[in-house]
View 1 (cartoon, rainbow, N blue to C red):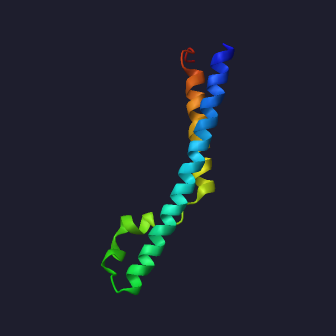
View 2: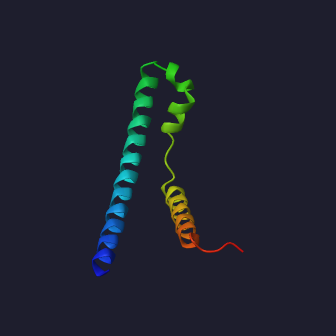
View 3: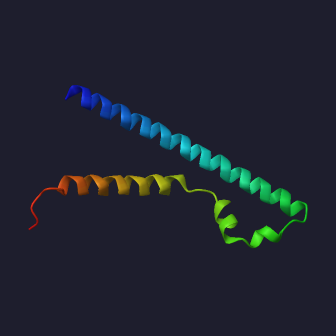
Length: 89
């Protein structure tokens, strides 16, 4: 049981680190997309500016909102797991 708790804490720690790295990567990629759009605009290559997916990808990611959404999903998952196997009323 102690070994399982230790393993669980390690997994949670690594999951947290992975999330941080992914968020940093997201910010860097978004910044690169913004810079690339500016380069295209300055070169007169504006055909891609009407692409809604490209526009969405170059919007700054709201990290705080994303973290809050992840936390809500995690809590909902925990609630769901807590209720598994309990009789319905």
